[in-house]
Length: 218
Image 1 (cartoon, rainbow, N blue to C red):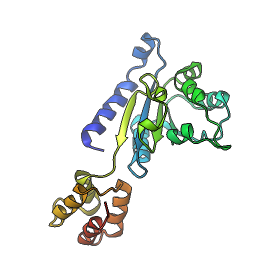
Image 2 (cartoon, helix red, strand yellow):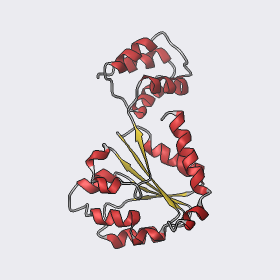
Image 3 (cartoon, one colour):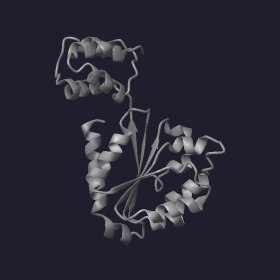
Image 4 (cartoon, rainbow, N blue to C red):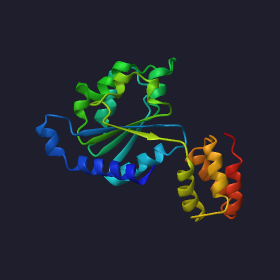
């Protein structure tokens, strides 16, 4: 994630922390919700941890796959405390995958987001994650008022590669950078997690790490 977007999210969270009276004046529950979406390995979980650290909130990573009805969502919310960051992962899978082990309904999710149940959730931040594009789920779930902030976590481009090379390998420039850039321009698709592992495994030889990066097929 680029620095500008990180700063925007940080500013949004900081403003939320200071807005209790503002929300109450509007007659709204003092909570904020975020959607983090993108392919696996793009940094969503790490970003959730960073959000919790910034807020100094407790994290509730909730497994809702076995919830049977809206009552389960209400009980879960009531069991959390103020200053909580509640994480619901794989929202797209929950709403699109039909199986005996997944009985989550759209109405249960909507009531959790903005129904009567949600009024129990003062001073909380809700984070939903998805591994696919937003078009995979009912757009009613994603409308403003249910999810306030949408954040996309893309696969790597060359600029991201350079940031990772600086962090993992201590490289600002290298003779192989033009070759790596060409690989990304031709459509290479790697997540930050995949690139990070290549660099960690080859940290004693930055040149080898960069060569491994150029071996990735588009």
